[in-house]
Amino acid sequence: MKTFNVPSKEQVSAANQPLFDNLHKALGFVPNLYAVMAWSETALGKYLAFQSAKTSLTNKEKEAVNLIVSSVNGCVYCQSAHTLLGKMNGFSEEETINIRRGFSTDTKINALVKFAKEVTENRGRATEQTLQAFFDAGYSNATLVDVIMLVGDKTIMNYLHNLTDIPVDFPLAQAI
Image 1 (cartoon, rainbow, N blue to C red):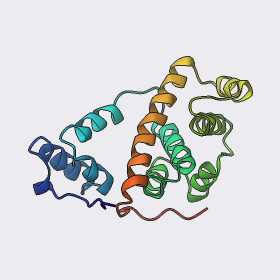
Image 2: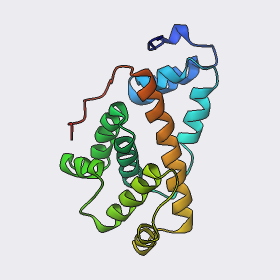
Image 3: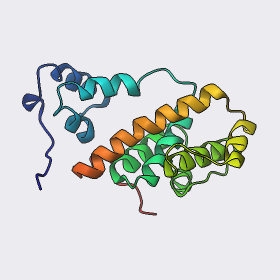
């Protein structure tokens, strides 16, 4: 089986080189998983536009969804990246672990996590009870759509890492 490697800026198309520059400027480096996307001439640009689109979710809520989806999909890379980002957005280490286990002590975040978990595990389906708890927590139809978009966004990256197994370049998330 062919193994994937992480391309350097010089190995990617001219179309991707400004994206590498922008990522480096914003983050101080180009995360390996983004770099792997640049093997495609168009995937990285399309993904970055999709990922940065406006949403009704707060950054903290987005990180909760990213953490549970990455946990369900068994993606060590994304669990590590989003543990760091989750902490940057107000979660403690313990909270990130709890979310990856499928719950939160915060009632609203808990409803969001349980909903995103069921949707991921059941390929777009959730029980009536979970859906009602999501709405009872104050989420709307618009938020439901935004959660589905985020589940799709994160699943793309989870699958890409699970297939390529490129090195994790974030502090490794604690195993659970």
